[in-house]
Length: 50
Image (cartoon, rainbow, N blue to C red):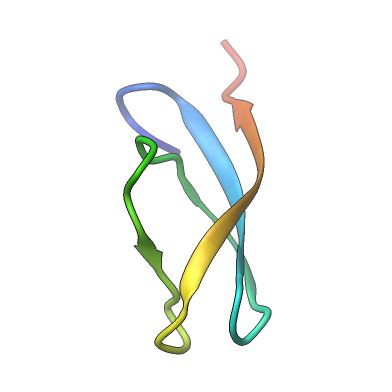
């Protein structure tokens, strides 16, 4: 979860297909895959419960 916005994002790698839940990032920032050299693509985004 992103400490500033409280947003969590479900990501998927465009190369190896891994799915991972990470903090949200501002648009235009490439998120590297933890398992390969590919980049993660945002799938779903949600805010933390208040």
